[in-house]
Length: 172
Image (cartoon, rainbow, N blue to C red; front, side, top):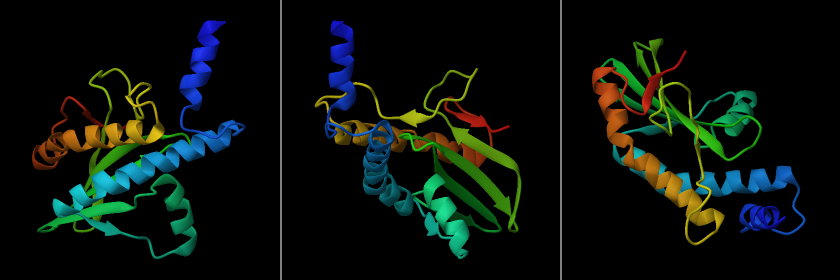
């Protein structure tokens, strides 16, 4: 009985009483997107990436749900390096960075994902940690964003060598 009360307190911290499950998921997702926009986007732009927006209005609406931060591209000669942060299709506060390389405007088989875990047997998406002091969604989202920035050297390593690393895995 006490476990359920603690779970309810931890799972509703920073949210409004009476929110539905969908509203709760969407609000946490918004908090996470805001943290990534504040920390990750400026960092990637400082590394030479530029935001690329789709011109097609219908496609823009769909991409805004899956890729709310847009798609980032960096040109190196005839090669383009792409990073996009794909969010969960059900509205949960989960995301996974996709890494791609294109040559002469065509994507080959060079597509990877940056996983939250180094466990190689399954894919793990990034999410806000269950516990971060203080217990609020903003702190947890910032912690997740800073973790992703900390893994950036693995992204650069993959772009340079095309070899999977501890968190980088080829997408099948």
